[in-house]
Length: 573
Image 1 (cartoon, rainbow, N blue to C red):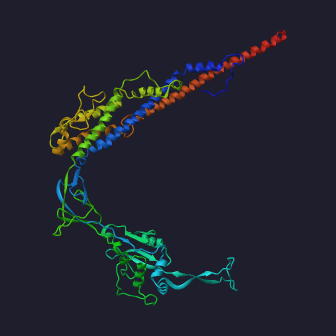
Image 2 (image 1 turned 45 degrees about the vertical axis):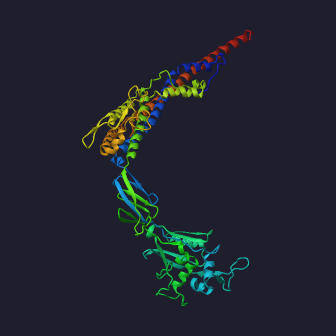
Image 3 (image 1 turned 180 degrees about the vertical axis):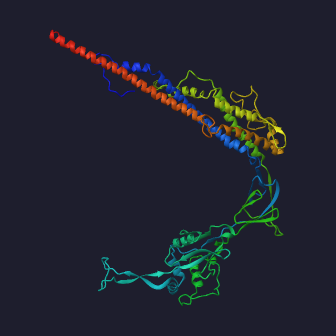
């Protein structure tokens, strides 16, 4: 409405504001009708968006799955002795019985270091293990770092020439380097460097940087080091700078050399430092585990894997325990049985029909709803006079009938019902319909309102209406899988393709939309424009009447002024 300043009825004594409001209210019917129409259209858009989401889910998830042959070729595997392995099968697995034995399980190369003293550091453990003389020979370069000398106030001390006076600082420690090798003795290109002044955590970090899982646990005072690779591929060793194995070896190698003329070999000092940290095979003892591959025997053929999982001809086998050995040294076998997963295929069809029935029932109800022409969206004033429950009930009656006799809805219902009622020819040359598999709608008098398009499976234990009938669907899946698969593939492809055509982008609808969403939005926007035009018309109409009353007030002001003047002349004022 207009924001113009208003002149009250001072001279006329009339309530001009109330009069104008009544005049405008009488002209507001068209505006209110446009608002109501736009509100209903907004509700219709919401109803279609909700239904479209359900339809697209049915289209992509259910019809999309049902049209794929692989969906029917799922296999189910079982094993007699489930303690030694778990087994699953994919569609390529061969039906039948096979023998299995587990010779050995996969192990990851792992070392639990020997126990160290509490609050250990490289300095304390190596210091306790080696003599001071050996430490100095092995870890220092024989010099001390030079640092500026300072006075008590922290100022640098200078010589007569003004140069800083230097003094010896801490000894410079040289790390001992270990070459990391894989299980075959090939260098990995990684190096572990251990220095005398390192903390245990810093040493663990060296191993982590070299490609291991490594940690020092201060609670147990041990190193825990393992490979990041499973099985034999994860085996490792540590060698001195000349390639000699110091992790496993004990005897002095032939290529012995001395360090700085001390007579101490590189091998000796390298192994001794690892030994002091509990990081040799001997120090770790049973805590040093070599990686090994898993081995199974399937149908008398041995297979090997770096993990306990095997993928063999459609079977997925995960070994969990080694098989027992017989007196002759052979392994006790167990049986694996593989068969078509009839239950899986049956439940897939059942789930499809459940979702289909829910949507077809909803569409039938929406389409056949009786239009409630007597119910229109409420104005603000009308809502003020009603409770929340009354408002919700009123609006629900309108929303339930918004898609009554909707053209888009009729097209969808016909597409579904015609496709589901059709007969389809399989690759065997035979023609089937849903009734061939014991899948039918109920009779007209047996089916509830708006559920006459829903399908029921004969023999379905969850369906009170048809559970007592012969289970044709399960029998067909068990005895004639190919024809059953072909039929449902063809049915799904037919309806899937038709729905895809309906979802093609056009001037009226967006891609993946099964209703004219663009057309509805255009109509909604046009109503918005009409509403603005009508609001402007009412504002102008209001201003016109206020202008008229303002002119009247001015005219009466002049008349009153003259009357007062005459009264003054005649002494009657």
